[in-house]
Image (cartoon, rainbow, N blue to C red; front, side, top):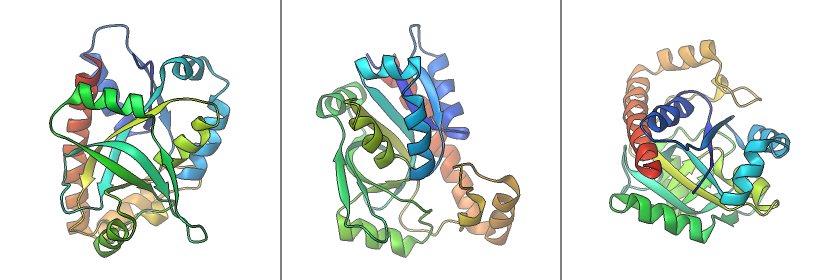
Length: 229
């Protein structure tokens, strides 16, 4: 069974750890990663020298966390299993990386009903506009968006590691998010003061984001327990 989970640092990491508290040993290692493709790439290149990586290489590595919906069919709290991930920057044609097929099938079998098989977009910036979300979803036939998935697949596939990905949707395609661009630092962490300022400037969107994130985190915790029970 999977021995290593990668999950964005902060609340998502804590939710996965809470979910594993209800699981009998042996339990997988949980490794926090930063937010954003560049910081993730830098961290994973160093992480490949560790014992957690060596364990994960033999059994496969699972990426967990939250994501945003790009599809009207997927709402807050829905569970998404990725079959592939796309990266689109301003200067590149979209590039697709597949998740491991056997691992993806195993995840579907473990979670059974109530999950969607999706293609995810990994963005190098926060997509906060609902109109842009809908546009990207239709343009590239993509159902969800995150900021780490493609980078994980890109780095670990070079080392021959099987990667599976399960995420929970925390914001829908119908509403704008607060613009948190200024709160995200170059090392992939959220800065508290700019984050608070951005939320205060857009209180309705901020309230919606907080509610969606709290619901998504509860589902993420339960999904972790289901996967490893």
